[in-house]
Image 1 (tube, rainbow, N blue to C red):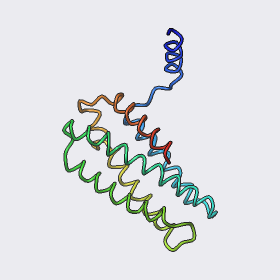
Image 2: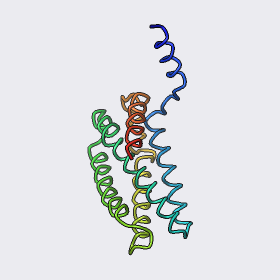
Image 3: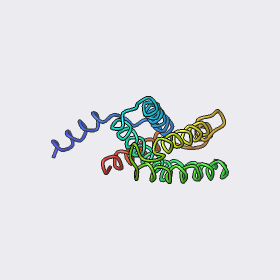
Image 4: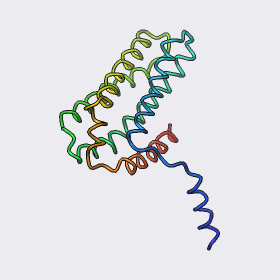
Amino acid sequence: MAAPQTQSRKSARKTKAAPDAITLLKNDHREVEDWFESFEKTSSAAKKGKLARQICTALTVHTQIEEEIFYPACREAGIEDDMMDEADIEHDSAKKLIEEIEAGAPGDDHFDARVKVLSEMIKHHVKEEEQRDGMFAKAKKADLDLDDLGAQMQARKDELMARM
């Protein structure tokens, strides 16, 4: 019986601790920003297709973990409904555009334009979340366990990414 416990402890030690919720979300933001920038710089249809798929997958997972875990925790902690409602609407708009991008391909009418508009929408959304009086600042001040939320979000993100 001792062997399985020893093995679990070893596995637990090898597992990298998840970042807190805000760090995880900000890391996602930086990654997608880099991909949008690469998309803008390339003229290769193959590379545009690959980047668009990466962006859409990352944003789909990101919005899902925010909507399932982070946003409900923020609402429960008393972060203003107006701020949270606006974030929900921005997510809905982004999801519609992601569906259109995923249904298309580089070279299709408006493909690049859709990716550009999605980039602009995401920049606006990120700015609102990360600004001095934005959602992340309010979450830091609220009674939220950001480490626990981060662990939950990372586990859910890993699960969703494994499915994609």
